[in-house]
Length: 100
Length: 174
Image (cartoon, rainbow over all chains, first blue to last red; front, side):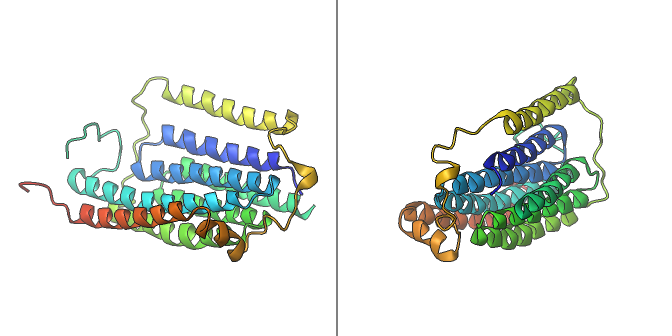
Protein backbone atom coordinates (compact mmCIF):
# COMPACT_ATOMS: atom_id res chain seq x y z
CA UNK A 1 0.00 0.00 0.00
CA UNK A 2 1.26 3.42 -0.99
CA UNK A 3 1.92 5.82 1.86
CA UNK A 4 -1.05 8.09 2.56
CA UNK A 5 1.27 11.09 2.37
CA UNK A 6 1.55 10.78 -1.42
CA UNK A 7 -2.19 11.10 -1.76
CA UNK A 8 -2.18 13.99 0.70
CA UNK A 9 0.40 15.87 -1.35
CA UNK A 10 -1.44 15.18 -4.59
CA UNK A 11 -4.58 16.55 -2.94
CA UNK A 12 -2.61 19.58 -1.73
CA UNK A 13 -1.36 20.27 -5.25
CA UNK A 14 -4.88 19.97 -6.66
CA UNK A 15 -6.20 22.26 -3.93
CA UNK A 16 -3.45 24.78 -4.61
CA UNK A 17 -4.21 24.83 -8.34
CA UNK A 18 -7.92 25.31 -7.59
CA UNK A 19 -7.32 28.07 -5.06
CA UNK A 20 -4.96 29.94 -7.39
CA UNK A 21 -7.40 29.59 -10.27
CA UNK A 22 -10.09 31.09 -8.08
CA UNK A 23 -7.79 34.05 -7.41
CA UNK A 24 -6.58 34.57 -10.98
CA UNK A 25 -9.59 33.91 -13.21
CA UNK A 26 -12.37 36.46 -13.69
CA UNK A 27 -14.96 34.26 -15.40
CA UNK A 28 -17.59 33.25 -12.82
CA UNK A 29 -18.03 29.81 -14.42
CA UNK A 30 -14.33 28.99 -14.35
CA UNK A 31 -14.12 30.21 -10.75
CA UNK A 32 -16.95 27.82 -9.97
CA UNK A 33 -15.04 24.94 -11.56
CA UNK A 34 -12.04 25.82 -9.42
CA UNK A 35 -14.24 25.46 -6.34
CA UNK A 36 -15.24 21.99 -7.54
CA UNK A 37 -11.54 21.21 -7.96
CA UNK A 38 -10.84 22.16 -4.34
CA UNK A 39 -13.77 20.06 -3.11
CA UNK A 40 -12.37 17.08 -4.98
CA UNK A 41 -8.94 17.58 -3.44
CA UNK A 42 -10.52 17.49 0.02
CA UNK A 43 -12.47 14.34 -0.90
CA UNK A 44 -9.23 12.62 -1.91
CA UNK A 45 -7.73 13.59 1.45
CA UNK A 46 -10.68 12.12 3.34
CA UNK A 47 -10.55 8.84 1.39
CA UNK A 48 -6.80 8.45 1.95
CA UNK A 49 -7.08 9.28 5.66
CA UNK A 50 -10.03 6.94 6.09
CA UNK A 51 -8.04 4.09 4.59
CA UNK A 52 -4.95 4.82 6.67
CA UNK A 53 -7.13 4.82 9.82
CA UNK A 54 -9.20 1.79 8.74
CA UNK A 55 -12.35 3.86 9.15
CA UNK A 56 -15.28 3.68 6.73
CA UNK A 57 -16.57 7.07 7.92
CA UNK A 58 -14.10 8.79 5.59
CA UNK A 59 -16.11 7.49 2.65
CA UNK A 60 -19.38 8.50 4.29
CA UNK A 61 -18.05 12.05 4.68
CA UNK A 62 -17.09 12.11 0.99
CA UNK A 63 -20.60 11.01 0.12
CA UNK A 64 -22.05 13.96 2.03
CA UNK A 65 -19.62 16.37 0.38
CA UNK A 66 -20.69 15.11 -3.05
CA UNK A 67 -24.34 15.76 -2.23
CA UNK A 68 -23.69 19.25 -0.87
CA UNK A 69 -21.51 20.08 -3.89
CA UNK A 70 -24.31 19.01 -6.24
CA UNK A 71 -26.77 21.29 -4.42
CA UNK A 72 -24.23 24.12 -4.53
CA UNK A 73 -23.74 23.72 -8.28
CA UNK A 74 -27.50 23.84 -8.92
CA UNK A 75 -28.01 27.09 -7.02
CA UNK A 76 -24.73 28.68 -8.14
CA UNK A 77 -25.32 28.10 -11.83
CA UNK A 78 -28.89 29.38 -11.52
CA UNK A 79 -27.52 32.58 -9.96
CA UNK A 80 -24.90 32.94 -12.70
CA UNK A 81 -27.54 32.49 -15.41
CA UNK A 82 -29.90 35.03 -13.83
CA UNK A 83 -27.04 37.54 -13.46
CA UNK A 84 -26.11 36.95 -17.10
CA UNK A 85 -29.69 37.73 -18.14
CA UNK A 86 -29.51 41.13 -16.43
CA UNK A 87 -25.94 42.14 -17.26
CA UNK A 88 -24.97 40.03 -20.29
CA UNK A 89 -21.64 39.22 -18.68
CA UNK A 90 -20.19 36.51 -16.49
CA UNK A 91 -17.05 38.42 -15.53
CA UNK A 92 -16.87 39.15 -11.82
CA UNK A 93 -14.99 42.39 -12.51
CA UNK A 94 -18.21 43.85 -13.90
CA UNK A 95 -20.33 42.63 -10.99
CA UNK A 96 -19.27 45.01 -8.27
CA UNK A 97 -22.62 45.65 -6.60
CA UNK A 98 -25.22 43.46 -4.95
CA UNK A 99 -28.15 45.38 -6.45
CA UNK A 100 -29.99 43.21 -8.96
CA UNK B 1 3.80 -1.58 -7.39
CA UNK B 2 0.58 -1.49 -9.35
CA UNK B 3 -0.82 1.09 -6.95
CA UNK B 4 2.24 3.31 -7.42
CA UNK B 5 1.83 3.08 -11.20
CA UNK B 6 -1.87 3.97 -10.96
CA UNK B 7 -1.01 6.84 -8.63
CA UNK B 8 1.57 8.26 -11.04
CA UNK B 9 -0.68 7.93 -14.10
CA UNK B 10 -3.90 9.17 -12.53
CA UNK B 11 -2.21 11.77 -10.33
CA UNK B 12 -0.54 13.18 -13.42
CA UNK B 13 -3.87 13.16 -15.23
CA UNK B 14 -5.58 14.91 -12.33
CA UNK B 15 -2.94 17.65 -12.14
CA UNK B 16 -2.94 18.12 -15.92
CA UNK B 17 -6.73 18.45 -15.88
CA UNK B 18 -6.57 20.93 -13.01
CA UNK B 19 -4.02 23.04 -14.87
CA UNK B 20 -6.25 22.94 -17.95
CA UNK B 21 -9.15 24.27 -15.88
CA UNK B 22 -7.11 27.25 -14.76
CA UNK B 23 -5.12 28.00 -17.92
CA UNK B 24 -7.60 27.35 -20.76
CA UNK B 25 -9.02 30.46 -22.41
CA UNK B 26 -12.18 28.71 -23.58
CA UNK B 27 -14.56 27.68 -20.74
CA UNK B 28 -15.41 24.48 -22.63
CA UNK B 29 -11.76 23.39 -22.40
CA UNK B 30 -11.88 24.21 -18.70
CA UNK B 31 -14.91 21.95 -18.31
CA UNK B 32 -13.13 19.13 -20.16
CA UNK B 33 -10.09 19.54 -17.92
CA UNK B 34 -12.33 19.32 -14.86
CA UNK B 35 -13.87 16.16 -16.33
CA UNK B 36 -10.40 14.60 -16.70
CA UNK B 37 -9.59 15.48 -13.09
CA UNK B 38 -12.86 14.00 -11.83
CA UNK B 39 -12.28 10.71 -13.68
CA UNK B 40 -8.67 10.46 -12.49
CA UNK B 41 -9.69 11.08 -8.90
CA UNK B 42 -12.43 8.44 -9.27
CA UNK B 43 -9.79 5.90 -10.32
CA UNK B 44 -7.74 6.84 -7.25
CA UNK B 45 -10.88 6.23 -5.15
CA UNK B 46 -11.12 2.73 -6.61
CA UNK B 47 -7.48 2.04 -5.73
CA UNK B 48 -8.48 3.03 -2.18
CA UNK B 49 -11.30 0.42 -2.31
CA UNK B 50 -13.92 3.20 -2.22
CA UNK B 51 -16.00 1.61 -4.97
CA UNK B 52 -19.36 3.20 -4.22
CA UNK B 53 -17.93 6.68 -3.82
CA UNK B 54 -16.08 6.29 -7.13
CA UNK B 55 -19.30 5.25 -8.87
CA UNK B 56 -21.18 8.18 -7.35
CA UNK B 57 -18.36 10.50 -8.39
CA UNK B 58 -18.63 9.38 -12.02
CA UNK B 59 -22.44 9.37 -12.14
CA UNK B 60 -23.20 12.55 -10.18
CA UNK B 61 -20.11 14.69 -10.83
CA UNK B 62 -18.86 13.64 -14.23
CA UNK B 63 -22.40 12.92 -15.41
CA UNK B 64 -24.92 15.33 -13.97
CA UNK B 65 -22.83 18.26 -12.72
CA UNK B 66 -20.59 18.51 -15.79
CA UNK B 67 -23.62 18.32 -18.07
CA UNK B 68 -25.13 21.21 -16.14
CA UNK B 69 -21.87 23.15 -16.47
CA UNK B 70 -21.73 22.57 -20.23
CA UNK B 71 -25.37 23.60 -20.58
CA UNK B 72 -24.69 26.89 -18.82
CA UNK B 73 -21.50 27.50 -20.80
CA UNK B 74 -23.42 27.03 -24.05
CA UNK B 75 -26.26 29.20 -22.75
CA UNK B 76 -23.97 32.07 -21.79
CA UNK B 77 -21.91 31.77 -24.96
CA UNK B 78 -18.39 30.53 -25.41
CA UNK B 79 -17.32 33.00 -28.06
CA UNK B 80 -16.89 35.85 -25.59
CA UNK B 81 -13.28 35.44 -24.53
CA UNK B 82 -12.32 36.73 -21.14
CA UNK B 83 -10.17 39.84 -21.02
CA UNK B 84 -6.81 38.93 -19.57
CA UNK B 85 -5.80 42.33 -18.20
CA UNK B 86 -5.45 42.40 -14.45
CA UNK B 87 -6.97 45.37 -12.62
CA UNK B 88 -5.52 44.64 -9.20
CA UNK B 89 -1.85 45.62 -8.87
CA UNK B 90 0.56 42.81 -7.86
CA UNK B 91 -2.29 40.24 -7.95
CA UNK B 92 -0.42 37.89 -10.29
CA UNK B 93 2.84 38.12 -8.34
CA UNK B 94 1.18 37.46 -4.98
CA UNK B 95 -0.80 34.53 -6.39
CA UNK B 96 2.30 32.99 -7.96
CA UNK B 97 4.14 33.30 -4.64
CA UNK B 98 1.24 31.72 -2.74
CA UNK B 99 1.06 28.86 -5.21
CA UNK B 100 4.77 28.13 -5.03
CA UNK B 101 4.52 28.18 -1.23
CA UNK B 102 1.61 25.72 -1.13
CA UNK B 103 3.18 23.27 -3.58
CA UNK B 104 6.55 23.47 -1.81
CA UNK B 105 4.88 22.82 1.55
CA UNK B 106 3.02 19.81 0.16
CA UNK B 107 6.11 18.28 -1.42
CA UNK B 108 8.20 19.04 1.66
CA UNK B 109 5.73 17.27 3.91
CA UNK B 110 5.63 14.28 1.55
CA UNK B 111 9.38 13.88 1.24
CA UNK B 112 10.54 14.82 4.74
CA UNK B 113 7.50 14.18 6.95
CA UNK B 114 6.96 10.79 8.58
CA UNK B 115 3.20 11.11 9.09
CA UNK B 116 2.78 10.58 12.77
CA UNK B 117 -0.55 12.37 12.44
CA UNK B 118 -2.19 9.01 11.82
CA UNK B 119 -2.36 7.47 15.28
CA UNK B 120 -3.04 3.86 14.33
CA UNK B 121 -1.17 3.93 11.06
CA UNK B 122 0.35 1.29 8.85
CA UNK B 123 0.73 -1.73 11.10
CA UNK B 124 -2.95 -2.17 11.98
CA UNK B 125 -4.52 -1.26 8.63
CA UNK B 126 -7.09 -3.86 7.71
CA UNK B 127 -8.17 -3.84 4.09
CA UNK B 128 -11.58 -5.30 4.84
CA UNK B 129 -12.59 -2.48 7.21
CA UNK B 130 -12.54 0.15 4.48
CA UNK B 131 -13.69 -1.98 1.57
CA UNK B 132 -16.36 0.44 0.44
CA UNK B 133 -19.12 -1.78 -0.85
CA UNK B 134 -22.66 -0.42 -0.89
CA UNK B 135 -23.50 -2.27 2.30
CA UNK B 136 -20.43 -1.07 4.19
CA UNK B 137 -21.03 2.58 3.28
CA UNK B 138 -24.80 2.43 3.76
CA UNK B 139 -24.70 1.00 7.27
CA UNK B 140 -23.17 4.06 9.01
CA UNK B 141 -25.09 6.30 6.61
CA UNK B 142 -28.46 5.02 7.80
CA UNK B 143 -27.60 4.44 11.46
CA UNK B 144 -24.94 6.76 12.80
CA UNK B 145 -25.43 9.62 10.33
CA UNK B 146 -29.13 9.31 9.58
CA UNK B 147 -29.87 12.84 10.80
CA UNK B 148 -27.24 14.31 8.48
CA UNK B 149 -28.65 12.15 5.70
CA UNK B 150 -32.13 13.61 6.22
CA UNK B 151 -30.65 17.10 6.36
CA UNK B 152 -28.98 16.61 2.97
CA UNK B 153 -32.31 15.40 1.56
CA UNK B 154 -33.89 18.63 2.79
CA UNK B 155 -30.94 20.60 1.36
CA UNK B 156 -31.39 19.06 -2.07
CA UNK B 157 -35.12 19.86 -2.02
CA UNK B 158 -34.41 23.47 -1.06
CA UNK B 159 -31.72 23.75 -3.75
CA UNK B 160 -34.04 22.42 -6.47
CA UNK B 161 -36.85 24.76 -5.38
CA UNK B 162 -34.41 27.67 -5.20
CA UNK B 163 -33.08 27.00 -8.69
CA UNK B 164 -36.63 26.95 -10.09
CA UNK B 165 -37.48 30.16 -8.23
CA UNK B 166 -34.33 31.86 -9.59
CA UNK B 167 -35.12 30.72 -13.13
CA UNK B 168 -38.62 32.24 -12.91
CA UNK B 169 -37.52 35.46 -11.21
CA UNK B 170 -38.14 38.44 -13.47
CA UNK B 171 -37.45 41.30 -11.07
CA UNK B 172 -39.90 43.94 -9.88
CA UNK B 173 -41.20 46.47 -12.41
CA UNK B 174 -39.56 44.82 -15.34
